[in-house]
Image 1 (cartoon, rainbow, N blue to C red):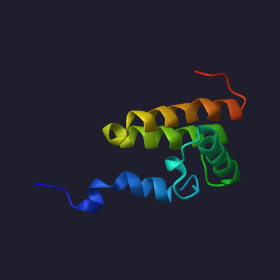
Image 2 (spheres, helix red, strand yellow):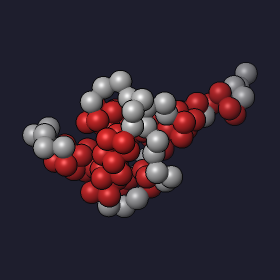
Image 3 (tube, helix red, strand yellow):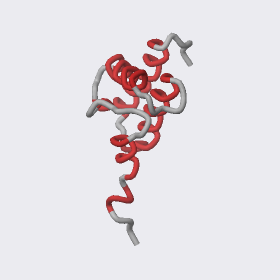
Image 4 (cartoon, rainbow, N blue to C red):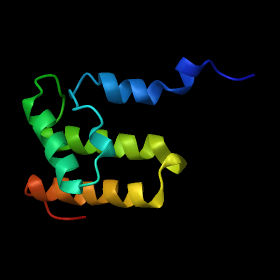
Length: 97
């Protein structure tokens, strides 16, 4: 028995309607890791609903997206998104992983 389409896409809903961050549309589809990181940073710093620090919220949303997309991400998209993690750390003045 298959699940209804809306049950299978709950992670897309979380990304679009996160209570912690108001994300710019298609932020994870950009090709420049610095632009992805800057957008996440801006959203996290402007949010008054987040529970953690801006860095935690931004990194959490990026990691969530990568994990939920899983095998559906191409090698190139994974490379760009993982580079965005490093860029996000740099923009927040954190040491690289």
